[in-house]
Image (cartoon, rainbow, N blue to C red; front, top):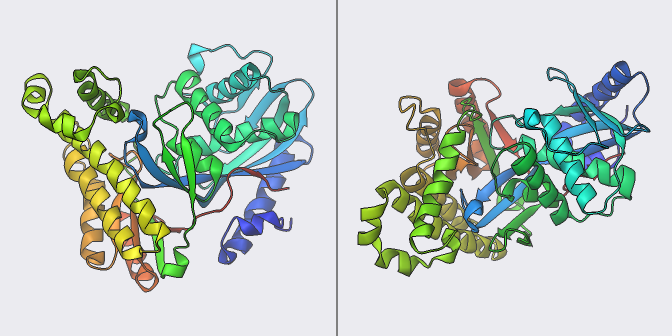
Length: 412
C-alpha cells in the first residue's frame, strides 16, 4: 500500500520507504489474521522525557515530548462489543466491553489496560463498542520510551474515534489511560508518559493538581540548532524493577509525611533544609538526597523551559547534563542496589561523557535502573557516536529520535 499522506508527517523523509513496507506488511497481516481488510489505521507515539526525572509522582514538574517511534493499529469495527487485539509474538487480547469490572487475573496484562480504559470511558458517559486490531510497534519495550502509554492512548483513541466521533481532548485521554494503568494493570505511575504520548510535540507539565495537570506546549526545533537527540538502549530491561521505582516514590513521600504532607510539592526547600538534623534521625540519608533531587529538578524544569523559549541551546545542554548528574548522584536510579555489579547504564553514561564532553549533553532516560540513556550532540558527531555505542551495546542499540508534532491520530 502507498504510505498515507498524514503518515508522511509522522516520520522523517528518509524513513518513508521503510514505513511504506511496514504499513504494507501490517495490512497484509491484518487480513491474514481476521479474514477481511482493515478499515482504519491509527498511530500513537512513544515519548521521551526531556527533564523532570521522577518528579511527576510527587506533584512535580517535567518536560516531555512525543517521538517518531510509534505503535500502529490496523483496525476494523465489530458489532458484538468484543475488542480483539493481535500482535505477532504476543498472546491474543480479548475483552468484552459489556463487562468492565476489574479482574485481578488481568493485572499486568494488556487485557487489563483495555478493560480499564473501557470502564473509565463508560463512567464518563462515552459510548463503547468492539473492534479487531492488529498492532505493530517500534517503541522499544522496557526502554523508557513508554510502549505501554503508547498502547493505552492508541486504544483510547480507537474507542473514541469509532464510537464517539473523536471528541475526547488530549488531557482526558491521558488521564483515562493512566487510570487503566494504575487500577486495572496495577502499576502505580504518574501521567508524564501518557500526557507526552497524547499531546504530541514538546510540552512542559506541572502536576501540582494531579487530577488536572497544567500543560504548556514548547516550540523548539533541534534540527535548527544543528543538534540531534540520540537514545541508546543498554539492553538491561527494567520490567522487574518495580520495587526500585516504588522505593523512590515512597522515600520522597516519607520526607513529605515528616511535615504532615502527602507529597514533596507541598513542602518548601527551605523548610526541608531547616529540618535536616531531625530528618536524619527519622529517615535514611538516601531518602533525604532523593528529596534534594526532587526540589532541584523542579527548578531545572523551569530553567530548561525558559532556555528553549529563549532559543538558548547551550543553556539547555547544561541543564540536561545537570539533570543527569543529579539522577546519578542523588536520585540514584542508574543501577539497582540489588544487583550492584550490573551497571550497563553507568557504562553507557561514562562512554558518552568521554565522547561528548564539552560538546553535548547526556542523562538517564525515563525510570532508570535499565533501559536507555539520552544524549544531545552536534549533527556531525552522530555517526561516530552511534557507531561506537552500537559496537559496545550491540547493533541497533543507538538511534536518532525526532520529535513528532502529533499525539495519537487516525492515519487513514
